[in-house]
Image (tube, rainbow, N blue to C red; front, side, top):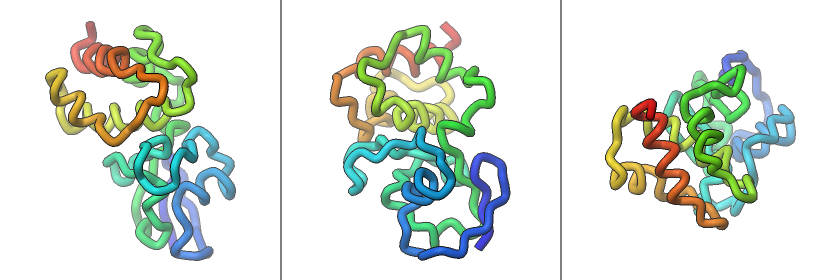
Length: 149
């Protein structure tokens, strides 16, 4: 089957039940997408599938025929996506493990709602867990990216 990963056409001939997370990390070496829980409860493995945030541990390779997947490595060539800039400006990470998934979820949220309220940010980011509790900084970064301030 054919799919696009970070804008590059790929052929996949493996097990259609393989989690996309394993393909990205083990076969393509795209290790920015993190393994957290493996059952869709933490969001560390969030990627975009055709522009929408998805947990790559739950998406099977067989579901991706003709689709486009974007990982944290493909979000911005130079790390200057507005959400990445805001993440740095707000000093969001503590341990940093969940941050690629958080950033991908936030980028998807801002595609859906260009200027979300704080409540919409909290609701939109639910499902992505930060064990360090950086939620106030996450909300501040999403707010900054949405308003430019």
